[in-house]
Image (tube, rainbow, N blue to C red; front, side, top):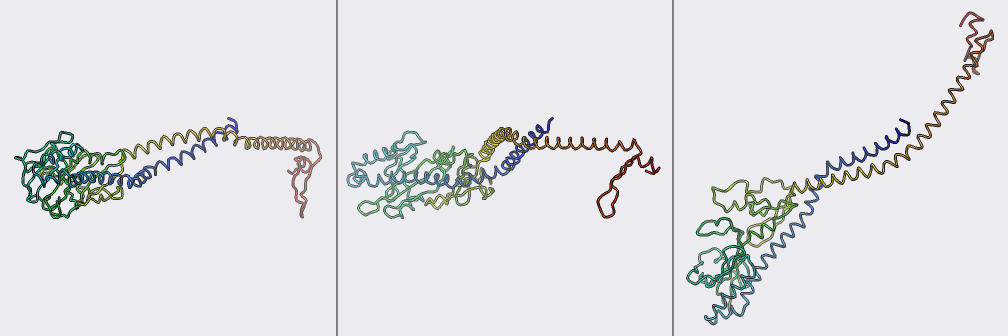
Length: 371
């Protein structure tokens, strides 16, 4: 293999090794970089979740406000014969969203006067007959809503629907929103809307990038992306598990945002970068690394070719000079050897202070019998 070819491969391999070393270093730190980058983006993602949550509650408040300000409903207190119109008003409003579970008007004594209900999300809403209406005077939400002033709203905690004293299975997460109803300055009762929240909450935590957790102020998991250990706080004691608590996860690997819902539940959204997403990003970057190596290889070919030209030319000149010197030395040795064939002796002195001898031909031994 010629010197130029060797140089070509040396330069080529140097470029490749440099690119590979740089990319290996990047791969090692890439996972942590992807994680930190996803945590930075988590702030915007969490705020979008907060907006969606507040938008959902605002929509329910708007429905209660529509009833409160409805002329049809106000006439309910002037003429008992228009009660049927009020029931139809409640039914029409319930039909505006498949997630309205109950819509009720309860008078100041706790008696349900109007109740519209649907059993499951998406099913038809229907008016409850008078004979099935109940007194709710001792329910906590009635007492709390009755304390409010005109125009104020009350929010329940996110909990599970209870039927006949037991948690309904499969679980149905529900939130209740209520407001007092005033007529001509007098508090007449309360308006309450119950909202099915399961589908909405699942849509909030659905993500390919993050494992999303909705937790309460005590860090109990209400809902999460994997739908594991949800609602353990509300389930029967025998089914509760310690894994329903969020305290085991490292805070430096997560982003936390308080939802600021006025229900004293301290709801928080916690985002943890998904390891599958991080691995996919690292894999994608690895493919980019292969492209970089290929590009470096392509660029190294002509670069290595041109970089090998000059050293090769210099080596050719050096080799030529060395050959010339070798030939001169051979000619000199031949010339000096002629003295050894005769009686003549060749001395060479150095031009120094002592005139030291630099060279004596071998013929001196024939003359002096000493080498």
